[in-house]
Length: 273
Figure 1: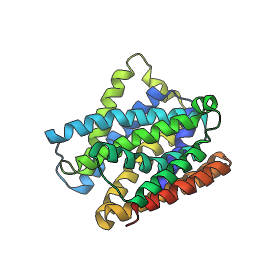
Figure 2 (figure 1 turned 30 degrees about the vertical axis):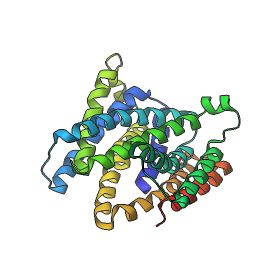
Figure 3 (figure 1 turned 60 degrees about the horizontal axis):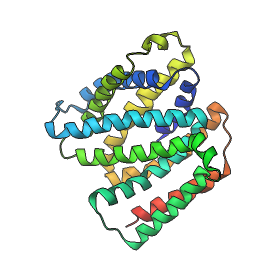
């Protein structure tokens, strides 16, 4: 959770010197190669079942979209805001998406939790002036949260067919190939002209903030159970705020804290047995 929280500050640093298309490409390139030693570590033969291809291809597109939205949000707003808004709203959007796609029925408490969560989201997003909201980073954070909800649903549906680490590895590979095509008109060698701070942030985001953090989470989920492991996600907004304050000097906004706490309470109500 600490590694994930720090990823938002790393992304903010990267927005100062690189466009989203080239940056996203190199992030997935680093992820792809960083996963190779992880594959040796888990000692599970690499396998790509045909039934998993639709989940991998769709997740690759959504992962790229998420990276674009997160970049545009952080560029216009703060790393701390992104860490709170996206992490807190994603479970709520996942709940709604699952309800619609799989026609699931829930308890009255869960529906109340959803309403409370959406109210918390309105507070966090600070939707007062629609024009300012659309032009600001919070709008892109909302789109990123919706996109990540789609990624979460696809990941859950893929579990019967492919190992989670293999799933992430192939998503990194597919995303890398798609971004190579997108970047044909771009000069992707621009990264080699950047300074040390840029490379530290990029390597952190690709290796520690994504590959290693995700692997730790999958290992922990296997030992603790997915419900227990997912409860630790509530720590990501806290670490995102603390790290962005320490590294970037970002101030904490009261509406983000209040709205975040309201939405976190709603996630608790939705998942409470």
